[in-house]
Amino acid sequence: MKFAKFCQKLSNQAGSSKTFLTAVSLIAVWALTGPYFQYNDTWQLIINTSTTIITFLMVFLIQNTQNRDNDILHLKLDELIRATKEAHNAALSLDKLGSRELQKLREQYSKLGQPNAVDDSEREADSSGASSGPI
Image 1: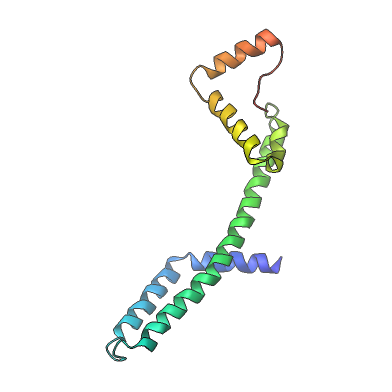
Image 2 (image 1 turned 180 degrees about the vertical axis):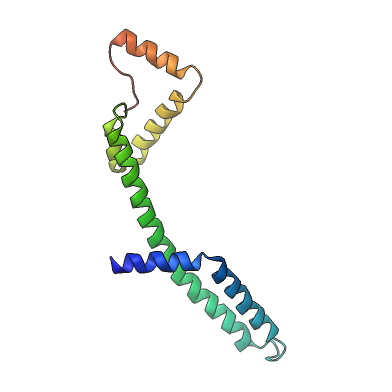
């Protein structure tokens, strides 16, 4: 749990305006030192290496934060589905479906979003005596 807190704190810090201004300031200082170092290869290597290392580390930090936020979001949505009586509880296990099955469900929900789709599904439910939900 300590690593997750560390990543969250670091991610919040990295996304702040203070950090952005610091980065811009460091780049400006680097650019201003160009004439002093005669724009040599070492001078260029400093910025290239620095940005590469920072980018490499930030990829993992961002991915960790996104994975955590994604898990939290899914848990919240699962709780809303579970708590809603009209919702299909089968939606709680959508993460176990394959791409084709998810695409079929997406198409079914898209059809529900079309004009007159509610009227059509209500007529089907009345005529068959069962709910015609997508899941």
